[in-house]
Image 1 (tube, rainbow, N blue to C red):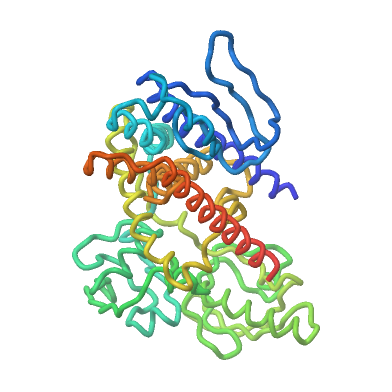
Image 2: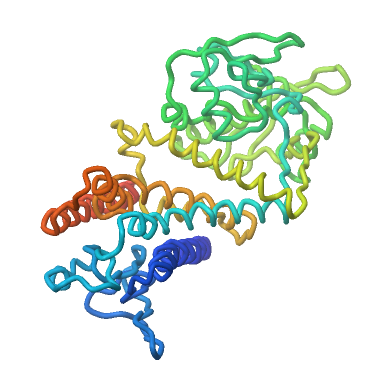
Length: 447
């Protein structure tokens, strides 16, 4: 329950900030061009609101709605979420949106997207300025990588050190690395001290993202870093520095392989009603091999800690205040490129199933409060919000932009009736997508 509340609070804080900034972009450009803004709301307020106030001598009512699905600004003289068609039947007034030149209306509509993208860049810049950029380079992961069955069928081998995807250097572990690998024709690895090419088949990022175990993970050597007193290895006489060679006659080449075997043992033991498992383990100490009987605990652990990424050399990049801004721009642009590139998977059968709602968004936040991670996720969501809003779908900013571009090119406006129907169709599509995304979340939670 505590984890749920922490994630829920982070989600609400992040989305509230993004909504304020997005709608603030529309508000800013509206005021700049002397267009009246009647409402500025966080969340939607059908029938009633939780809070509202209207400053003296102001045309704008500020408030908080009770439906937490975003927010809006109600701009005079346009057909938007409020569907205020009665206002559009009245003669146009000089302070209304419809009375302004097309280029001003265009800037008002892109204002929200622009502010979200600028916010993401600013957050990324401040993250780099405050925390810097620290990671373990793939080339410094000297034990190489652990590959699943699919990857091994392609030609990768456990222990390979990833170097390049086509001619692009692979620098760090993450989604960008996986994306580069799936889109490459040739991946170059360092194997036994020699560069080796692995020729990639046609494969999508969505395919390998579903793999369990993962397509590629960091390989953790099978050398015991420390033994937990009273644990299975301790009782069997296995010590720090020993290498685990085999379990029940099956060879181990890494700690990852032992974890996989323990998972299988747990499944078999629980199916048989057992609360632990016993295994014959071959280990090496000082070049000499021996065999010991090891029993797991009730959680099917053997009581050992193995080496981790912390044992590798860490690359640390620090940025001064002014240096952080161009670095933040590069990070924001690369994040946007990656997200746009991955959008093609949404239009596949598997991609449609992977679409998530508020539960999925909330799950990307950490289980414990971490400001670094919170701001990273907020910047990422700001990029997503900017991109999704600029899609040419009626009811989104991109739909209004599309019709404004048509007006500029054709030199005539779409009729108010057309805009009204387009808005209704767009809102229907958006609500359908919202229902589908949250339905997927519910199905994943239940099954």
